[in-house]
Image (cartoon, rainbow, N blue to C red; front, side):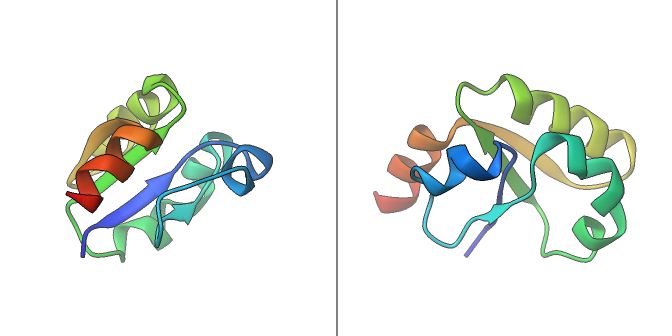
Length: 82
């Protein structure tokens, strides 16, 4: 199973998310870089529209993490279920 990080706020995440995903709000990503580096890669990032996960993807890639922007969590959820 892929590692999926949802970078939306806790409240957004609690309103619905990909089963098995990890919630790390975008503003917390820089503080959790070592923890993220220890996760199974490649990592798929998602949010509401793909904007915040795009920012997180660019930051993590610049720091040597193999990851991709999955876009909307709804799209990632659909891909994981099919």
